Image (tube, rainbow, N blue to C red; front, side, top):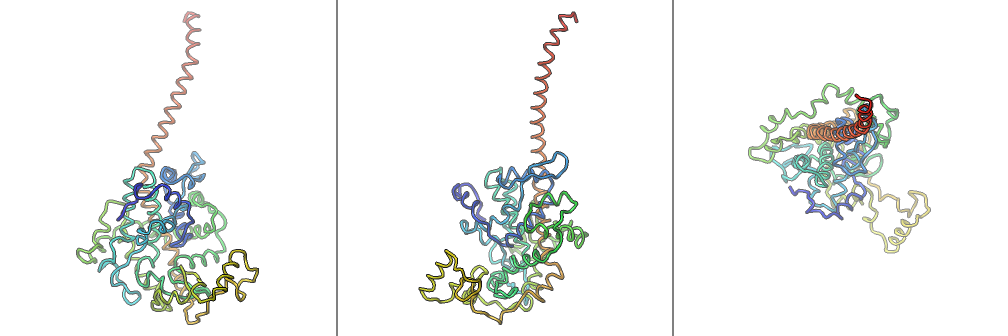
Length: 436
C-alpha cells in the first residue's frame, strides 16, 4: 500500500485538504459518533497525548478526571471524516475504504474471504497498515494522517455495505426512503442515523458520568451518543461489549480461508487489531438486513443516471432541458427564485416520480431497528477504536506525562533551591556575626 509521507504530499496540498469541508462515508455524523464513543473510552492520559499528534484546533478543555482539572484534551471526532474529504486530492486512497469479497452476491450468496478479494489493498489491510504507521511514525503530519485514517477506517469497516462489492456497496441500487429517492448506500451511511437522531426524544440531559460527558462537545448527535453508551454498553450489550475487541475468533476464520489467499495473513500481526476476525461475523448483516426484501436487484450505474441521481441526491441536470431553461435555473440558483419550494420551475422540484421503487422507511427499517443493528455497529466501532488506541498509545502517553512532570518538578526544585539559598546566605552571615 502506498504510504502517506511528507515527500509524497506537498505542504500546500496538506493545508488545502485540512481546510476542506468534511464529506461523509458512514456519514459525517456516523463517523463522529464512532469517534466520540471511542473518546469516552480512552484513558485520560491518551486524550491529552492526542494533542501531540493532532493539530491544535482539535483541542478542548476537559473536566475529566477531576484531579488536576481542567485538562487540555484533543478530540478524535473533529477529523474523523477527513479521509473522505482527502479522497479528491488523494484518489489512490479511495479503494481503501471498502473490501470486495470474490463470489459475494447477497442475499443469495454471502462469501467473505473464502475466495479472497478483488484487491488486496482494501479497508482490512489499510487498517493494519495505518495502525502500524501510527505506531512507528515519530511525529509530524505522517503520524497525524495515520491517526485520522485509523479513526475513519475502523468506522468504515463497521458499515455493512463497505464489506460487499454488490452494486458498488449498494450505490447502484435506487430505493425510496421517507418518500424520496436515495441510493441504498446513503440510506445506511446517514439517512437511518438521521431518523434515529430526529426521533430520539430524551437523553438531552447530561448523564452523571463525567467520563462520558467530557467526551461530548455540544453537537447534534450528543443525545444519540448518550443513548448508545448508556442504554447499549450499560444495558443491551453490557455482558458482551468488553469482548468486542478480542481476536479470539482469528484461528477459526483463518481455517475457513482458501489456502494461500490474502485472507490468511490479514490478522497475523503484532498490532492490537484483527480486521478479519472483527468483520467476518458482521458480513451476514449484508444479506440479512441490507439487501433484504424489498431491496431490488442491482440496477447499475446507467439506471442511476437515468433516474437523475448524483452522489445519492437528486441531480436535475440528468433531465434534458432547453439551453434557456438551464440558464434561468443557474440564475435562480445564484440569487434565489422567490418561489415556494417545490413549485413548478423551482430548482428544488424533484425529477419525475418512480412509484415502482420500494420504500425502506417502514417494515425494512423496523427490522433493522428491532435488532438495533445500526446502534450496535456504531458502538462496536467505537469500542474497537478505543481498544486500539489505548493499547498502542498508553505507554508512550504515560511516559510523556512522567517526563513532563519531571521537567516541571526539576524547575520547581531549582526555583526553591535558589530561593532558599538567597534567604539562607544573609541569615548565615548574621549568625556568624552573633558568634554562632
